[in-house]
Image (cartoon, rainbow, N blue to C red; front, side):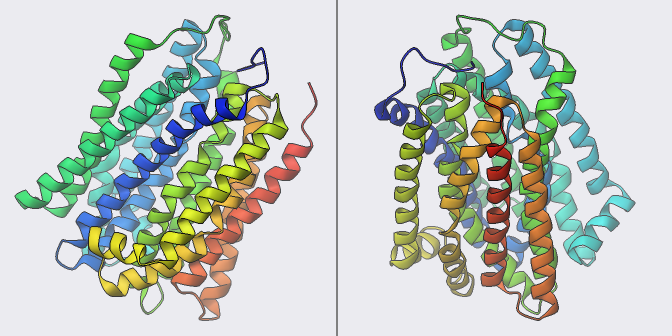
Length: 428
């Protein structure tokens, strides 16, 4: 079995494996906090936050399709043939996604589609599609670095994974500061920071992998073909895409409310802050691919303990003056956006538990290579979000708080779906 061990791993083994990945999730999410902080310091900050929220959420529709690339590498890059085949598959898939993003950003039919989805006028549409066009090459950078990251996790080099992501964070922050102080246009500052962080991370990961990576003692997937990769990757990609659709679906309805731009700005800040804690919970998926399906009771005990700690920290930040210091003092978010963002964060405190529950069954489905259940859960999440948002918009009750509740409810629907899929898995 992939990732099986001679003895059942201990709680200490889980912790030593998990904490660098948790810091990795924190580092990646912190990058978005500093992006928001940079946007908040430009003129007309509410408008800039809303424009970037729309552009970034659309970009994430494609970028999130790569979310399970580390898991794919962890599972299949266990021989030179498996590495080459799966790497080629990822890069070809990403090139196709770049072409679709280019169609949306650079063609008249594509821009008309974006305008219709978000109800944008000319100037706002031009800004959003400009972001999308400039973000295209970052898809390829992200695909390569996430794939190589997965091979480091496979080799349990999670300390290096954390160090590399700290490098990504530092580079991103440095370019944001340079761009703001040099008076660059806000679009070039934000995109340049993402590109610099991704490129630096990729080059450093290549060096670390060359120096420290060792192939598994027992090589696997020496005859891997694209059919197997498609069977594994399409469902998990669907799940990632559905995750990325959650925000645009909400923004499409929220943007039509009387205070649409203000609500979108608050949701952007609140969702991104909550993502730091969500990313920590997302790392649980690696447990199952790396350690196998032994000691499930121990894995559940560890996950519950970590989730309780994550939720407690999140709640303390939301209900104490720490939120004023972080959002107002550190990031410079305006008071009207900040107050609403804190209300969003309070609702999002429900999310780590749902993410933990969902990812337990995601881990089982990944190891068993029964990823269709993950796709089904993601699709039903977005359907639920759409229907609830439509209902609230129609009844005039959609605002930043109810939108956050809709997102959380969508994750609840997904968690119940993968619970059912996980319970139907065959025993080895």
